[in-house]
Every structure is written in structure tokens, then in C-alpha cells.
Image (cartoon, rainbow, N blue to C red; front, side, top):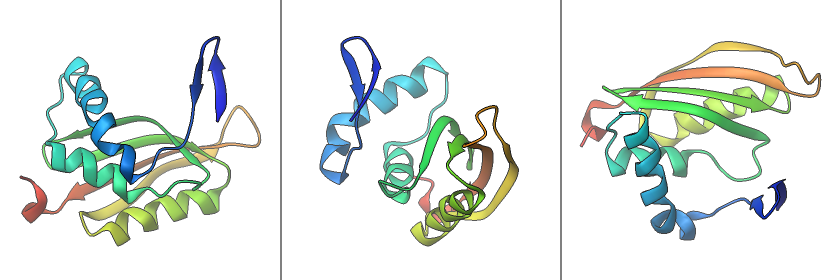
Length: 122
């Protein structure tokens, strides 16, 4: 668990938490006027294992494409994120489009893009 602001904390979630988190993910998407399906949101959540060493800071998931912006503890971790998406089977054509040392020298800022498999669009 990590303190992020007075009275709030962040903690790693598991598969068992996804039903509770889905309405929050849906509200995030509604706020930013994107409309991924629940299946797409859950696939992304399941693709990235806990304790990966990466934090997704922003994502766009619509029209068959996903874009992830994040921070990682190393360039190798960025590669592990890419591999995790590939192994999930829900995504294809996964590309690291940006990876550079962050303003915090212990972090790597990255962006990944991927297509969502056509048979998984519903």
C-alpha cells in the first residue's frame, strides 16, 4: 500500500477486485468520452500482472486501438509490459512508440500502442 494523499492510499488489486473496479473504470472512460466495452476494460486489467514495476498513467481504448502511457522502473520492464499484452491474446501489433528516461532518473516514461483483435471487439 502506498499513501498518495491524506486519507487516501493506493494498493495493488487482483482478479477478485475487478467486479468492484469496473464501474470506476467505466466512469473514467465516460468522463473522457471513450466507449470501450467492459470486455476490453477487463482484458486490459487482466493483461498486466501485479508487481510488474510499471504504472499506467493514462490510457485510451477505443476504435480497435489501445494507447498506454506509463512509468516503469526500467527499460526491461517496458519490454515486460509489451510481452504481457502479447501473451494476453487480446491485443496484436503491439509497439513501444516512446521510451525515455523520465524526469526522475529512476523511472522510464513509455507509450505503447496495440490493436485489439477483431474477434475480441465485442
